[in-house]
Amino acid sequence: MMLIGEYSHVVDPKKRLALPSKFRKELGRKVVVTRGLDRCLFIYPLKTWNEIAEKLGTLPVGESGTRSFIRVMLAGATDVDVDGQGRILLPEYLKEYAGISKNVTIAGLFNRMEIWDENKWKEYKNKAEKNTDEIAEQLGKLGIY
Image 1 (cartoon, helix red, strand yellow):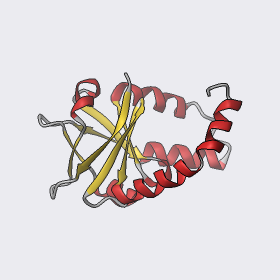
Image 2: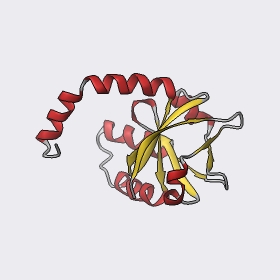
Image 3: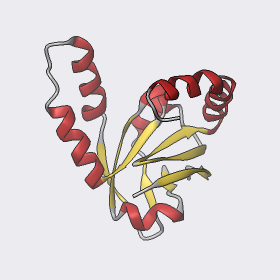
């Protein structure tokens, strides 16, 4: 499965968000939405989420940072149905966490999607684009680029 690309969408007045049509078949009828990093939301296909949750469940809980991360990811997660029109219902607590009101950007990032408030995404992307040389250097150290 490869989820890639950037898509502009709108959260309707009933808190529903249409997922990119390109991804709907791969995602299936149920996905997991949780708090992401950098104040966005993560959307995982159910199979991928189960693999991630399994890994999180095996992390040692003796370190406070690890405990916090596990709590944010697992306690904030909810499984949601994808309706016949490819929409999901975004819970209010997740919308508040990500500062989402109406216009969003959905970014496909290989095995997950991220939902960003449109303006926050533009700000984040502008900062990241200014640091591409440093990012490429770090990827080079990892043998990726």
